[in-house]
Amino acid sequence: MKEAKTFYLAEKAVEYAKSILGDGPEIQSIAERESGRLYLAHNLERMMLVLRLLGRFGKGKGSLLEIGSPPFIFSLLLTTHTDYSLTLSSLSEEVQKSEKSLAGRRFPLWEFNAELHRFPSDDNSFDVVLCLEVIEHLLKDPTHMLCEIHRVLKPDGILLLSTPNCLRMSKVVAMLFDRNREFKYMQCLYDRHNREYTIHELKDLLGGVGFDTLLAKAVNFKERWKKPSIRYCYRLMNIITYLPLFRKKRKQLVIVARKCASEPSCYRPDWLYGGEEEMGSIGERNWM
Image (cartoon, rainbow, N blue to C red):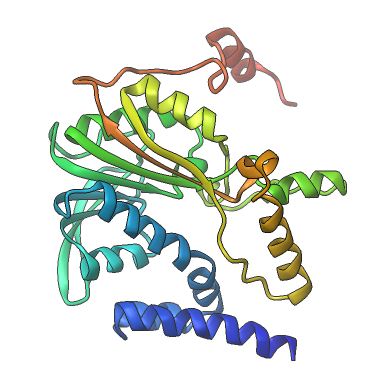
């Protein structure tokens, strides 16, 4: 019975994805895997919110860069629901350009490391940059990525950023019950969440680089966990976050910011970066 409910939730997500994206090979390849079905169940609602915000704050057309495109589900949404000229990107140790086929069309695909490399684009190239569920995975230098986003955005260009809330209610409750909610070590360091943020931290970081925040809010989405008991517990936590004292404990952070300075500022605040002496001592430490 439990497996039937799990399949029902995942199957509903696949059905919904097919209704808005079609039944192409991209959706089929994801729907064949359990991990892919669960990805759709957990992320489609967030994607639709971002799409609505893009319609509200964007111009509806122009050039758009999506940072961290794989598994290309939101890329498909962009191709079917917007008129933007789309450029995709994925993680790579070396900067290189190729192409990606989506829905029978081919799009530029950049491969680079967003926190280490200079983006392979001229200044003032894009009307919109999307940075969705990326910043929490970075290891070394989120300011570099934000400065590069600022550089490639056109004057008054829009950045739309989403990331998990470091103060979300599930983490608070887990600590009350002596549970550790930090991410496991993984083979690829970028697969885990390496540094999560509060809404005030992100607003400070964006403002320091040269962005004007137009919208910053914490939001909840429906929980679709396998076990009904866990699912109902998360729904209860979501209800609690509607109380004024707990509104900043919602699950996800969504920020819309506008490029307001002509040049980015390499802003590295003390609350995020260690000093040179501190970093040096870590590098020189004998771990043996």
